[in-house]
Image (cartoon, rainbow, N blue to C red; front, top):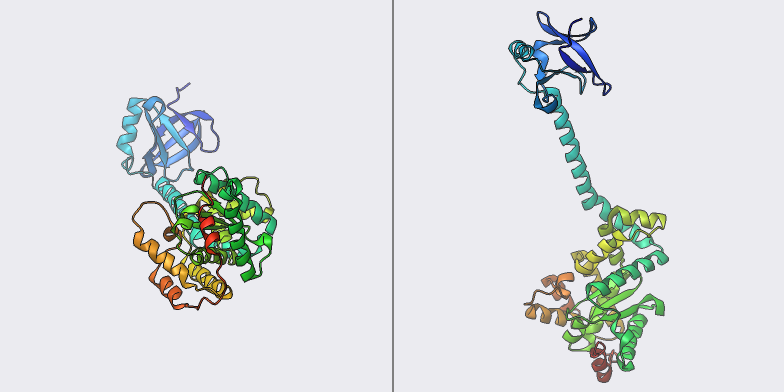
Length: 365
């Protein structure tokens, strides 16, 4: 019986078969026990991967199914193949096309992700934000609130651990007046202060506004503080925080919102970090400014106070810490709008001098 010349793989199974290799006039013929199993034109034969331990040669045909091939180790047989198969080293066109096909699909997948990030997620966020159930929004707000405490290295908010009740009363007075200006209930707006040198404030889902003590210290009048908080109330009223969370949290947040399952909180915490560090769009800032202007007018106070604070922070911005200007850029257009909204302060002061000074000491140990 003739000894096998090579090991044949049919491309359909992982099994290997012993075959003989014969050279016809224009084609290489593979036979198993005298029965022809493959016939490849010499011009179609290409060199494939090396055999075991890089010994011998593996050949296939550009017209053969994927993974079909034969491995030969006899050096005389290899020399004959190299002589007859003039296109042996030309490359496997089918495999090149296969790799190109994979690359095109990969590029399409990346493009799809980009389109989702740039178009679908903002569209979904705008559609979902107004209809997120209150209970879910509150749970999200709780998660982001706990994250804020961690980010700023605080165990609790200042008014929770203060020894003096006067600062907490001042904060509640401020909250009451802001609620009254917009017809809000007691549960619709909660002001919380965290000890931090960073001059900033954040609106969270669920009606919370986080005030960093740095913004209280930067404010020179109660109206400046009220202006900042009224602006943040505008973000709450327009669902900007929810929209940012949905965009940043991605599909995990969307599915959790739709299914009512927020047990997997990783998307929320990633999104919460983005909420505490990212800035809103110019349109969102303009809408929140309009809300601040109307709130201050209802209170009989000048909306210009917010513009004064932003201008002062702009002039003193020289450190590397993130502040109100990072999350709420003081563009020339914003400042011009706030300056033009001059209103005579006909209403009662939002806080009296004693209350204002007490509020500034809310984070004192």
